[in-house]
Amino acid sequence: MQILKLLREPRSAASVARELELPRQRVTYHVRALEKSGLLRNVGERRRGNFVEQLVQATARYYLSAPHALGGLAPTLDAAQDRFSSAYLVGMVAEAIRDVATLRERASDAGKKLATFSLDTEVRFSCAEDQNAFAEELATCVAHLVNKYDDHETDGGRSFRFILAGYPATGHSHTETDNDD
Figure 1 (tube, rainbow, N blue to C red):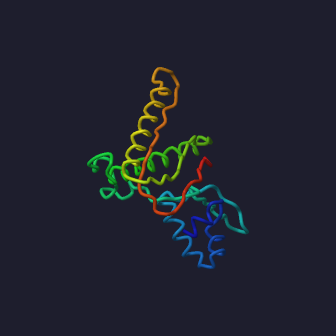
Figure 2 (cartoon, rainbow, N blue to C red):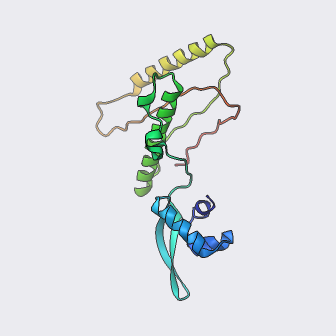
Figure 3 (tube, one colour):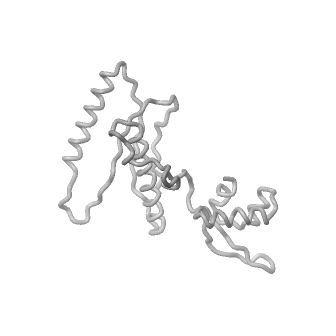
């Protein structure tokens, strides 16, 4: 993790080793393993004295274990019994993680920003009936907006996927949106 953090900007394994006060060979071993796994990429070289240093950089600013990396243990929508189950929510979020990671890579390769929208809020219900009424009203409002704006007729239109999910709050507030790319 320290190597990935230091390599958000292009650097050599030797400079990372100096920063971490670790043997160069040890850091080089880990840098090669991270390159092989796709977490680092070679971005050039620079001459330093009588030799040429390879410069590497992290392939992303942030990392999250991709659910598909777990193979058969990864959550899927197929495993869910119904759309109200936690298994369905986990499968849906796993698909979103995979999709956004793919789209971020494509946008980066094209030198473009990825258009996203995130909404995160917390609602405290006085009873289960209010929670159910809220869910029904939210579903109705979303269906109305989808019917109003969904346009399959226009050539060149852009399709977006929206995910709405609700689950009991953990006590940690996450009300800021992240739309940096």
